[in-house]
Amino acid sequence: MASAAPQIGMARGPRVGVIVSDSPVADRVRARIVEAKARFHANDNISAFFEEGEVEALQEEVSEKIAEVLRGLVIDTESDHNTRDTARRVAKMYVQEVFGGRYRPQPAVTEFPNVSRLDELMIVGPITVRSACSHHLCPIMGRIWVGVMPNEHSALIGLSKYARLVEWVMSRPQIQEEAIAQLAELLQEKMQPDGLAIVMEADHHCMQWRGVKDMDSKMTNSMMRGSFLEDPNLRREFLALLANQR
Image 1: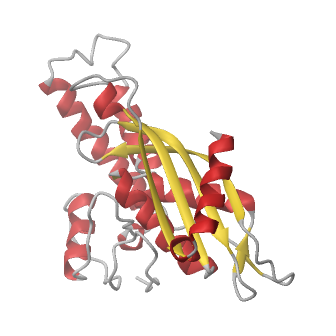
Image 2: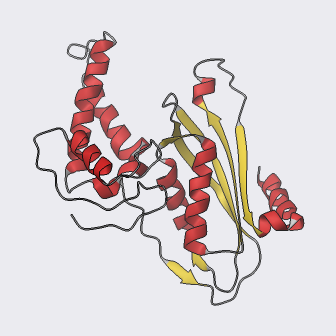
């Protein structure tokens, strides 16, 4: 297996040789990660530890496990036409969509030099966020705003690439605070700006759908780096412009 450079939010460590085994794909991938002494938390990207075709095989394994869960819940998946293919659909949703940021490599993002030497505040957003709480696997739905204060040496990325990177980081089970920390690390590494600010506002269905069932509560948190921390006027300008959009 070829080596892969570590990415933000990705389990770190060298890829190791193919483990010859008839064991399930999940066990083989886990063994590679453990051998590499890497991490595989819910919000880590572990794509570097998969061989070709193994993500699809993992999806089949997950489908079998989901079918067992449905049987455990005493749901008739044989004669009930509504649930006959539910296990397959749920497995695809988890592996390819809702948790896809764990199993897909970082999307390709072209970076451009700051030839115009831009040094004014840029704000991108709102970007739609779809994630899942790692405590109950319930949806987190919200919006993100990104503020960037570039310098003449900063790399710039296209507007659509912000959305691609947000989707990649957010498509994992996690908590909101850690999610924007991962996103901030990724953007800081790619762009090297003087300042970076991220604000996320989201509904948490683990609170709305279960437990206290409070439909009105939202969680809003922010992360400021560089000049956004050092310059209160810049921070106020960013937050004021966001207030107009919200």
